[in-house]
Length: 215
Image (cartoon, rainbow, N blue to C red):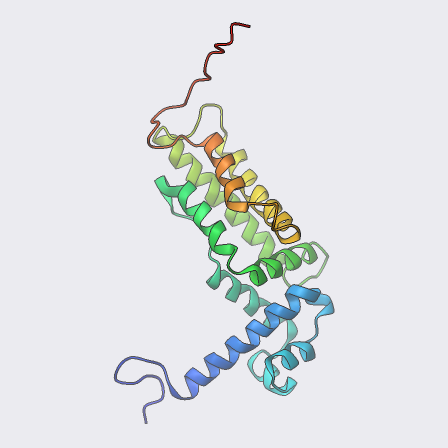
């Protein structure tokens, strides 16, 4: 009996139903944890939002902590990071920031859980510790590569600028969630990156223009 896939390669049968059900649960968990946080949001609320019994939810995700880990992995799948972009670092970062504006529920989830994870014994603490450690390293390495091909402005330390990008992105994104009308995340990131990275059209660091006012 064919259950995993059809002749056309599409997934059907119980495997597809399980995947679809898990996605529904994850979407419900994103909404609950994003609006109430992990601590205040309950398994029952997630089950209610998904339109299933709590026992059904626990069949797929036996504990609340396991559900949270799955939610974070789901978030990373939908809104990935941007390592390995090399010469196109600025363009890819800005495009990802634009993409994030299309999934505000995931950005809200990320921001809420990130804040909660600073508390002791939070199940997402290790996730965020490793995530920030990885991003600091990846972004610093991207900038070191740009420096090696003459694209990083003189005086910029990749080991400092990399973590700065991570901090700026998270901070301005939180401000956008609070005031989307007045905060432009892609524009803010591009403005900073333009300060430290030399565009390929320029080819070298721009020198300050002389003051022609005569004063």
